[in-house]
Length: 123
Image 1: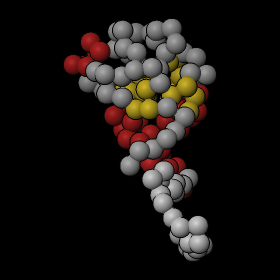
Image 2: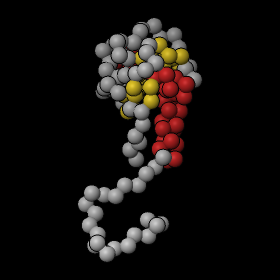
Image 3: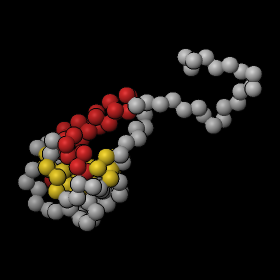
Image 4: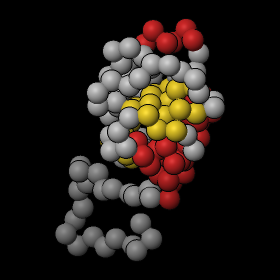
């Protein structure tokens, strides 16, 4: 299931009950692995072995553990949390729950129906 979402780093900080380091107005609209994150992505750092991916990372936002000493790059924000892994799980669940509530059904562009066809209100 693909979930469409868009949050500012300030909104994400409130959802995660974290501490924002950087701009509150950065837009995040996708989730990425720390190794491949791009602009617009949020990712997380939970294990020391992945620290090498933070410097030069293109992610718009990185969830970091408390006490992490680096600072975000320009156009990037960090959200400091007790447990970045669990914070990411919280975020994914929040996005998924929000998507279920806002789920919309689309008509596929290849639909072909007779001009006399009647569509039930339950469809």
